[in-house]
Figure 1 (cartoon, rainbow, N blue to C red):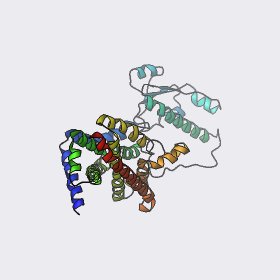
Figure 2: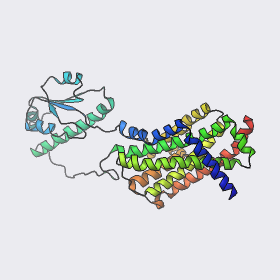
Figure 3: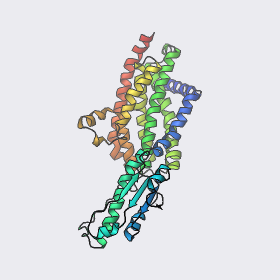
Length: 374
């Protein structure tokens, strides 16, 4: 009991020290408010509110149907412009896409000829332009095929294939990107806060004072772990409620309590990783380099950027030792699919075992690093 009290008060000292560090507090506030919102909404993998114009030289029912096939929120209302003025309008920055319908287009379609539609693209908006050309091509092809079926130029399909998207029926990228951004911030901040606290104790010379007290390396490490994990857990919970659900409108399909429990388990692993990196690094600069070399690949291979199934088989096996992979898998199952503990318990077990292994290794290296410094 006395040992638990020592760990509690030592961790409380860590929280008070963090409260006086305005740089870290500002980083914490930024990471769980504006940073995930900007990451979720700043880079879009779909076309959104793109400006489009039509040069309709055919003025037929088919050409008008093609112009009416573009809807918000992917595209702005279609504007009809004078034929031949498309390049000048794009140079002026008024339109991102210009579709030119040649004269006699519907007549050529009825005659079973293959007329061409010209699509001008402002490629300076690289991502929207690259994705938008696929959108426009699919929309035009679908409308022309529907017209051809209606005038008996082609036979209707024997099988009507209907695609339904599970867990995200509207395919909203913000919903997925927001949770991935929150998980990334949790990973970064937890590792940085814990490791920086350990490095700061060493650089200020207070680590030797702590070891001179009736404290063990386990006491010091556990105090760092619970204090920093508690701060990040509270910040992550507030971000989940007010930023993810409030600002971004993300709906949590599963249990919020189960998600926070998994987050707490992951925080134990991430803080243990921070302690481990701090025992290896000799200075804050070395610690920063280690974070870039280790934490960044962990996030990239966690399944948030690319699916685990899309990675090479040998890499899929290697990622089993990454706690970020198990946390990402459990979080997506809870948030998007409404999974319960009976589904995610293997991921929780993996995180616990990896955290214990990191903590045990950190304790073995901890005193050795202190003796080396002294």
